Length: 371
Image 1: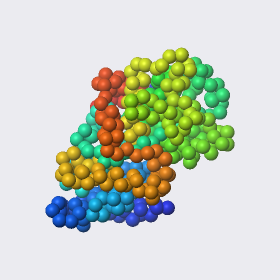
Image 2: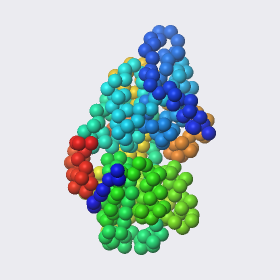
Image 3: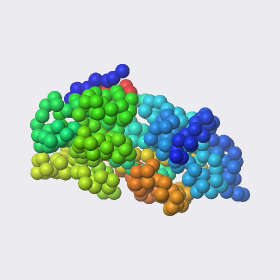
Image 4: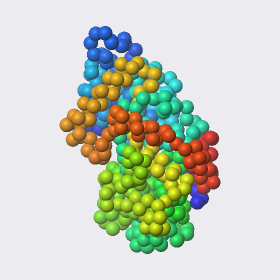
């Protein structure tokens, strides 16, 4: 494949917090002997994306619940540090923010994938951070009715007929590109779009004929196209279960995974480096799509308080009701379950990573060491 690069509640919270964007968490005494640990404290919640994006919305949704459930009711202040597809802000958090338990960070799949690939600009180490809470998301690959009518069996035989508009081969688009590789779909990718919104518009305008959108964007913007007969879903990107196996996305139970399509095409289960890479990055990009962290060397009492507060948070009935839209009906991970997901994300076979790096260099002229 060749590619070229092209040069409510949440809204009010964004307006409220955006002005408070450059203040690091205070250095008040830990108060471990009297009163609540976080009483009269400010927690700086670093979001390495611009205000208004999906990860920012997630963070601003979580902040009042953090304030309510963390003992001492600290003020939780979102601080946006955009740039580099989340790398700039995540680097700053890891390198300059004090590990005092009052600085926390949220990441997304766009932060996890460059770290796993060993991208040159990454200066943070997720293995040196302690996860607090995580949340899945999903994605659906769809095409136009003309291509869908051919069926996957015919699509894999075509050459030069499928066009994909995406953002970056080292972001979430990597997972979709790997799915094309596993299925042996000949897709020409045009990358460099500023977001998934513009890439969807490219599909609507006929500039591309195969696309993916995450769960919320698919339900909001693509389902109406499906209902109008302008788009047809092909497969969901799936989820990785606790055994490391690809399963159907619970939000799209009627859509097959690429494993099911592959078996239908070849009468055998998929195998090989592309398949192993696909499963690895689905786990890092979608099964653990969002994560909140604190420094690993933060005071133990602070880490314990943050962990225990998440137990009551996810049991909060108001949180459960309001999270249906923001968390897309996926169940968040905490405690041992979260740590298991983190371990699986970070436990990567070196040969798989080397294969992906070569895949990106050969097909997209991308050297991750130079990014």
